[in-house]
Length: 322
Image 1: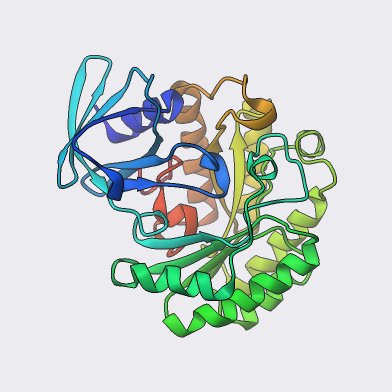
Image 2: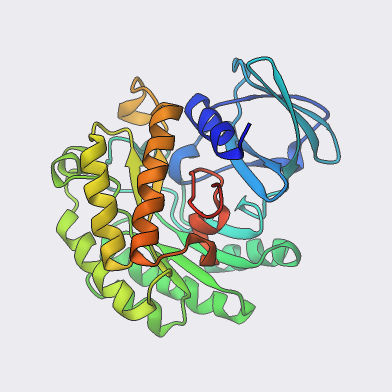
């Protein structure tokens, strides 16, 4: 079985049951994103390929940890040998840190506002990076919104200033103001990710009340001017109710700007808890569309050095999973 086919099946069927030897050092816990507030996840790898899978005691898919990271995956009667990856923070090889674990907005697919996590101090963030410095190649920063978009930006900028001393590539993904790309570029940030989340403005207004879809497009365009091609990314969730044609239009519009789309299969939590995940067949169909659009625009996800496109755990990524 091709890796792409297996990964599509796993992303569609998520989560998995973790059995066998103790595996605490391999469990990643998230304060933001699709796994926020859950019971953790593991990164199962075969060679250079990886997939991030949430943990649940009732899943029909099993990962049996044999010790020292060696693991066997059991899916639909098949046994697939692999290994577990040890996360830095949130994902392997990076310190991917959520600055503020709460948010004043209420996007319907997101658990963060319900969790109401705290804001990390700059000292705390520095200690976190120091604790994994020996096994990471990048720092990635994301954040909720504690009290306002401008205030959050200012705080994240202060965080970034203090992290530049590690001399590692830094990626940043926050909800932006019009000047966020310029300010991040001035600080030496390597890559940015500003998330459209929805394939159409209508879906965005339904899913993210109070936020500005047009602003995100404006900021993405400006970011490519500043950071260049292959250094700007945008999450688009697959499974919010968009058609394949609408998703293809969004993908092509992003790639034509020089933005690499991050196509994130819906994790049905918060207000969307009863919504089905996109099927493996749909994920593979969208992957082919994504692959063609990237090639036509001369974009290469393999060049990403930070954040989701470098990790590849949660998404099918052309060039990395093909």
